Length: 266
Image 1: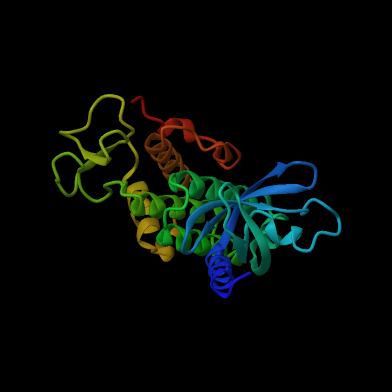
Image 2: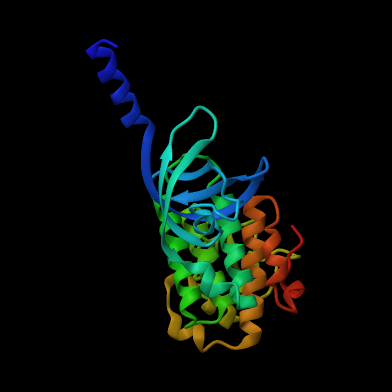
C-alpha cells in the first residue's frame, strides 16, 4: 500500500475511536450474547452503543456495564451502533443501592428521567450528566431520605431543561406571597386571584420544601414533616410527567400513600 494511503488509514482509525465517561442508564439484549447499552456521557450526551459478549459468564467487562455504574469508556464509531471496546469502572453506585429498596427505586427513577430529558441522542448535556452523578452519589451516601434526594434531582433537572416551576411567586401575575395553589399547566405556584378550579392547594410549608430542594437547602428539607414531603412528591411527579407528556414508570414504585390528593385535573 502506498505511503499516502497508509497515513490516511491511520488518520481514519484515530478519528473512529473516542473516549468518554458516563453513567449507564439501561441495557437491552442484542442477539444471544451482546447488549445495547444506553449511557449518559459527559461530552457526547446520551448515546447507545453495542457491547460484544457481555452476557457471557467470562465477559471482560459485563459487570462494568450495568445500570447505575459510572464508567470510563472507549468506543469505536460506526455507522449504526458504536461499539464499546473498553470499559473501566469509576464509581459502582449500583453496589450501594441494590440492597436498599427505597434508594434503588429512587435511583431507577433518576435514570429513567435522565434518559427522557435528553431526547436528542448525541446532543451534549453536561449539566444533566453532572446532576445525575451528584444525585446518585448523594443517594449512595445515605445522608438524606431517598425520596427527598429524588425530588431534588427531578426539580433541578427540570430547571436545567428550562421547566423550573415558579415556587416563590405567582407564575401568572408575579405576585410574591399569598400563594394559594399549584397550577401545573401554568407553570407552578399561583396566588388566590389567579388560582383556577382544579388546581392543587398545597400547604405553605410544601412550597417552602420544594424551594429548599431546588436550592439545595438540606437543613430545611431534612427537618420537614412527612405530610409535606408526601405532598411535595406528588406535585413534583405530576409536574415532571406533564412536561414530559408521558409517565415515568419507575415513579410508581416510589410514590407514597396520599399522592393522589395533590393530582391536578388539567
